[in-house]
Length: 467
Image: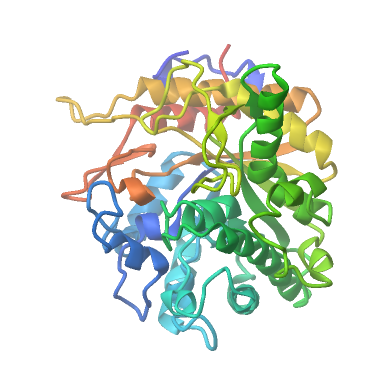
């Protein structure tokens, strides 16, 4: 592997299928800024980020990458990557500040201008309707733990879809409902910052309900050319040993990471063992008759965000302590001593292969996309004015090869979106973690293509990798 695409062979020896969708991805609060402009209201992330002690470096997304004003420059940079697709999210409080009712024309206009800029450069938009920035006005009414939020989400989705569907084919309802529900409501590390396991389970259910209601509402408008899906964060979850207690710990962790969302959305019901694992936390009264059918609607694709594998063992802690595995805090993660990214996540490309094969096997018939994969490293601009990031190139190269191996083994994988287009506000870590293909100087907002950006342009240009 070489970092310089000019040194790569003229033709790749490891091609991806014709029409494979190479892309990159961002999220609204992480890049846009302009939080007080164009009629945008506050989101739960505005509130959370401005709460002392919540963000590692004390920063906020008030300016972020200033994409709200610099989107044309960013589209030019994107086009230079040679990507055919750009996955971005719409900020709900920007287009519907009250969380209900008429759309805000200034907000709609921003996304219309962004779409026109993308299409003019031959980049197809891939819209995510919810990437965690719930309008604060809806949080004040109870947020995702309340059923009303699912209904409001469907109304918002239908309204913005009606306005933008002439320029957007692919629509994702939710990004990583696990994070919204459990990181935000069970351990409080993300907005809205709660530690309430029962509320976390209600939020998970209502996120899925909102997903189903939104797709139904959008499909009712009769545009047969549109495609609808959802994006899950996924992690193959393995026991640390063959000890039955560790095996059961892995079953529980897998159930509360993967199957609690996959099964209702793709199979039409919760796994019985998962419900049993959380029955001491919630009696399930929020699940109403007919919800299973409302949630399990036909999908045109499923997006998978993969960053790491999870290995666990049975611990002796308080089962009811705050945990991402709600009501099962006695499950403990285990380190395997692998190299890690700046996020502390072990690097395991085989985990991507394993989860792709598993999802294709257990939930067949729906095309898959890797909608996020990438790595944070401590990137700095060198004396030559360039950003040399060989670790990121190696990370992506290994993961692309794992994806190609999954395709060879029959997985219907149709695209791959690198996270992220550019360095940005990394949620609770603020600006301390850099995932971007493009370096952002947070003082001047100057953008600089990293070596990985040039390398990725070589991949997209040839639709493959060298030997």
